[in-house]
Image 1 (cartoon, rainbow, N blue to C red):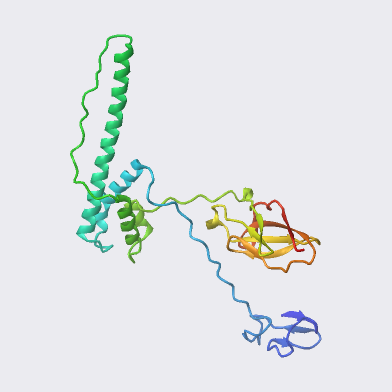
Image 2 (spheres, rainbow, N blue to C red):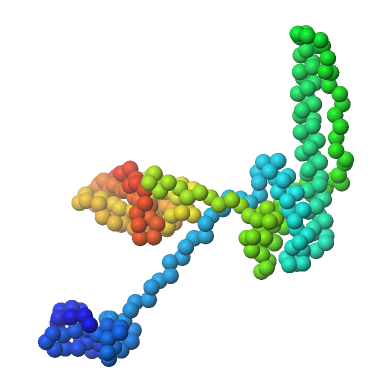
Length: 283
């Protein structure tokens, strides 16, 4: 039971209100409590906080050697998941052909690069001479067996196939890791060092505040924006989308408006306040 007084703000017809000396409000668990949603003691529903999925890097590797290894991993492991993921023989054969041809091209490029270095070194020895016996002339390189050429666009085809697989109802991250198509998790930022950057400009006589997530949108929820129009800072907005137009009517005479902001995660401020920036409005 919760003691109440006449000025507690409880409706006089609240089904859980008991007037007397003292007056009190029945709470859940008290004898006679009525679970009426309009009652001041009805437990408020707790909103479900949506947690952002941990962001990941692009699963398709950017470096040729890593991309080649990724193609080979997929090629060697996809057979076990063909039926589960509803793939056709043609899709698997196409990816295998892409993997084989790219592997050959990469091997040939590496062999050619090494041979070029040897040729350059030998050329310098022949031109300038050297110490000790002159030997070790480069020999023509041996290249791997030729693979069947494929059309340009191996990365695009592989990305499309990976996306198709991930959209299948039987897909899960464990399968993706076995196939090498799950990106690495992005490391969370150092929240203590985060600091919004504000830039001001006039837009139709109003103050337009430019800001961005600084590449950390996956880890941040809001920008808490404050303004000082001459009587101290006050909350202006909780903005969830970069850039904000201050629609407050401009004063009749020119006035300096100053802004500052800080990032938020849920109900908590994180990082540091931005530098204060000012603009003259009105007149």
